[in-house]
Image (cartoon, rainbow, N blue to C red):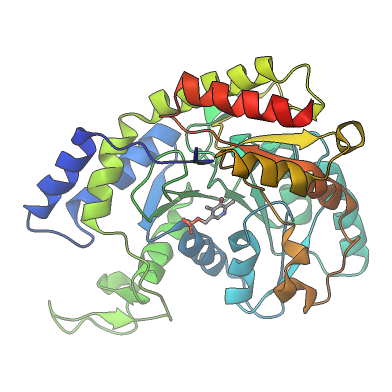
Length: 385
Ligand SMILES: *Cc1c(COP(=O)(O)O)cnc(C)c1O
């Protein structure tokens, strides 16, 4: 089976982990610090806080931005469930904003219309989380302007997008947002097995985010209630989590970072190969906004089902039967039973639902060979013609 995504691990990566295993630190230590610096520098952000995974990072971002019971967070339905669940972890409500029909990212126009209504009814969101779907940046300038006008915090779920660019800056610079979160799950741009990173420019967010990552504990006398009783002394000043990344994982992450640009350009090359090969088939290829440079996490096509005369399910099954590990990203989050129980219904976000009915993710990962790509294209051509 040719998978839809896969990590790329070299002997250098293995050696980097072994080197950490021989050091004094296994849990969070100097390698985590170096990994945080490497990502912050690459993205041009002031701060980077490594966490155990992106889900934890989204949770911590919501906590540090003050989300709680009675607040509302808005996100896109075309994302992984974690982008919405982070609000529920904080006891806040979730609502969704429909997507742009071309980029499949949260639509700034739909957001603006919904904000106007929410302002009239006095229920503006505290946070909006946008996902750079498939690695292509959202229109951050337009979203940033809305954030300023309506006073919400803007968080980028950039789990797909490390190595991507927007208007000449790296995704993760937080130029238009409050916080950006990356994932290092094996199918993402680089991997640490499990892992994530939270980036931001605000000095005020730095101490609370680091404390919330580790039980809500501080060792800084300046941040304690009352006086510090000695060198052994620490205080728990908030209810935090244990969301730390280990030095073993950071060792792998540092080694992977050296190949990030190579990974993204190989993905872009494969995407261009699909673009050329699928031009005459009844599928819509991923449209690219000129101001963006995608990290190409996913290559998603939309089947023109009226021309194909087969359901998406039948095309999916035929490809899987031929050993092509196609996938579907994503089942709209508001259609998950958990969110249906919170009152969301089929028909609530029609652009997202129409997209979902036709979407198919083709295999794409840096180690994919030309021969493997030719096989995917030939199988797809055979099934669709
Ligand atoms: C992978 C992913 C996540 C979760 O990442 P983890 O590191 O596995 O927690 C969150 N959001 C999106 C859009 C993702 O693709």
